[in-house]
Image 1 (spheres, helix red, strand yellow):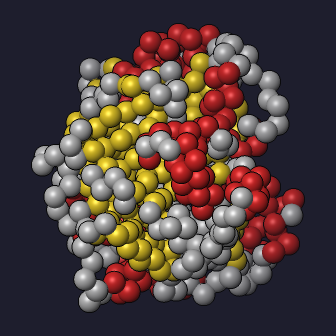
Image 2 (cartoon, protein in one colour):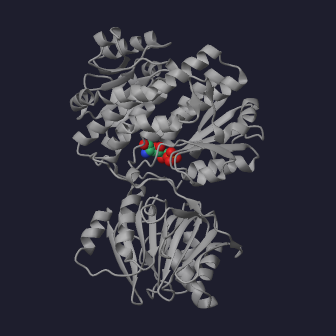
Image 3 (spheres, helix red, strand yellow):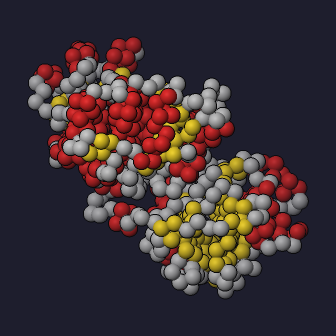
Length: 614
Ligand code: M6R
């Protein structure tokens, strides 16, 4: 949560910082603010709400400065108002600071600072940091970088910070622990700092991802220097970004979410490109290859994730257990980390995360690592924290996902998990050659089938118009379509604010059936496969209570067509791959319903893309 961005160099900082904030707005949009150093003065501009509010506020003002820091907030401590917006400044206005994370011991630190005369303007945890740095600098008579380093020794919690000091006009000081921070090395001796590479990409491709408890000093005279918190200098590891700028733009679509839904034929292809070949009959996930035997020998794989990524894990559980016959448990990272789980050295922990920054998933991995388990990751964001702390892993290669509601990242996660299940099964010998080849061939055909579903968009939009005013919705599925039902319900509730629940279809009669009346839309995944007849019976049960059925069916189905109020046909595929197809119409339905309800599809209320607080 929260996006931070900073610039120092010869250019005007404000346009760069504001543009960067817009790129990071998916991380939080409760308030936005900037601080700019202009002729020895730090000027502060902050506004509640989106970056657009900040821009309206600054319009017509003469804003200058070669050094600037900016922040877009997802509120944790204190209301989302102008005062609590970042940057926060020292009492004398000489230091300004932006922060992403949570200072857990801010209470005692605040008391201590107040007892020594510091007055607090905001209700944030962040403000303690700026006063603490100021206090240390004055009392210890040290440089701003050293004051930051010493202050961080007293801090418990997570932080990515950037500090601007008017006494050091050529310098920015930054640090991170458990919250991401990237340094961009500009072409003109200038520097960029940001929560992720998206604000940096159009200026430079040379970046350094800071590690936990590292402090970076970017200085227009001395360049980039990195120290660890113990004050030892660290050699920066400069990486070349591969991201393309077009991936960060809407490309003619009204919303990022729609663009990302439509990108799925390509993102799924990118995900399996070079990792499988049906004609030649092979599959390999290079990132985890050397761990495969360990996974096969493991007593169990524990998959940990949150939200949509947790749904992908549930699909993965079905695939890996069924094809590779390895015991899989799926855990919410937030529950796993706090319930004293039994973890053994032989266990394999697999974290799945789009952002690679989710605080609970990170913490669960750290716990598993401390118990000696092998920790693996499936992430979308290259260079993210989870991808760096894991022993090995695979990227999903879906490209940047900007819409807060996850779409293409989910199908890419399921694709990687399918490849993993197939690779493990083949190596273990738990799958026949015929089945292996069938599944590879079917998987290669998925992007084209996704494309065919996308071509039904107008039909799906017309169904959405019937249910746009619903207040509740049920989503039902069996087997690996149960997680698809969960994901469909999550998509609807998070962007349209309609209450929705996903259930295994057979569980409906143990409670949720009481909710069904003629007002209740019930979305059912009723594709051909093992449980088809059972799902048909569940549909009958809904119809008997006058519920409205919207069914996702296999092309050519006639049985459900006769029962349902609406059907959406999807191409036939192997049962194991149905989640990759059945998800698509549910994404489109949610999208259209949200648009028809005038909801902010890309930035739903109260949410943020990257949940870096627990
Ligand atoms: O970045 P992650 O995959 O770890 O994020 C997990 C969840 O926060 C995320 O999937 C969330 O549920 C999305 N809003 C779903 O659309």
